[in-house]
Image (cartoon, rainbow, N blue to C red; front, top):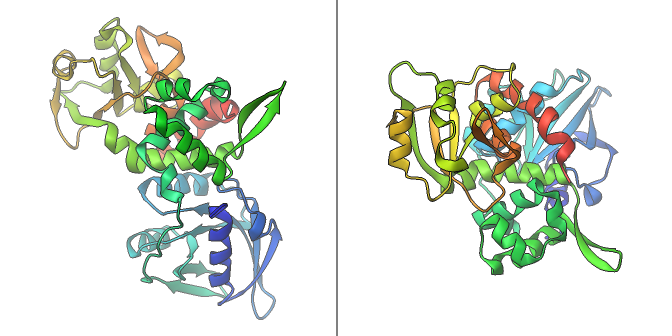
Length: 357
C-alpha cells in the first residue's frame, strides 16, 4: 500500500462515522500524510448540534513506545478547545484500558474506540487485530531502522553511495536498496535532480523520526541490548563520568538520562544511564571499572553500537564521548516518569527539532 497512513485514517473515519457525524476541517483521508503533525482536524457533531473539535494523531500500532510518544503529545497539547484523538490500526484490550484510564480518546481500524463527551460516550474494546498492510514491516526490521537512523542523523547521507550507507549504518550492502525502496513506496523518500545528478531527499522528516523512535523502542533496542546493571553501594549514575574519563578510547558512548543531562545540563537530575559499547569493548572489564553488578531492574543499561554514526559529532564532553542526540532522545522516551517526559520535550526542542533533514 503506497500510503499506509492515508488508508489507516480512512478506515478509522469509516468506523467513527458509524456512531457520530464527522466533519473533516482540514486535509482529506486520501492526501493525509502527517503521522506526527496533527494536520488532520475533525469536528464531531451531535444530534442537537453539539460539536467537539479534535486533532488526530496517527500510530500504525499502539505499543509501549508509541504510548510514550502519545503521552508526550498529550502533555504538550495546550489547546483546551481541541482535543487529541488517536487513530491506530489496532488497539488491544490492554492499551484500550490504559488509554481510557488516562482520558485519551481513540478509534482503531477494526472498530475499537473510546469517545468521552458529555453528549456522546462510546467505549468499544475487544475486536481482534487485522492483518497489517503488506510492506509495512519492511521498515520496522532492525536493518531498516539502522538505515533510517543514519539518514536522520547524517544529513550528508543524501549524497552517499549505497556502499557508504551500508558502512555507516553497519548493515549489509544488499539491504540498503531494499530499505530505500520501502521508504520511497511509503513516501518518506523521494529522488530529485541536482546539478545533473539524482539525489535523495527525505520528506515528512518528523513522521519518519516518529516511525524510527517507535521501531527503536520496540525492536532495535532489544536487539542491541547487552545487559542491565546497577551500581554497587550508594553510587549515583553521575559517578560514571569520572570513572570513564579518558578510558576505552571513545569506544564507550554515554547516553540515556546521564548523557542527555551532560549535553543539556540543569534540566534533570539523572537517575539512569545507557552506555553504547563498541564491539571491541570488554564488558567484564567495563563492569569492574564502573563497579556494576547485573540486575535486570538496574539503572545502567549496556547497548551495542552499530555502524559509524552513533557518537555526538562534537566529540568529547568532560573527558567522555556522548551518544548522538537521536539516541539520547530515544533513550529518554524509554522512561515513564513525567519529569523525564518533560525533559524529553525540552531536549527535542533544543537538540532535535532544528536538525531534521
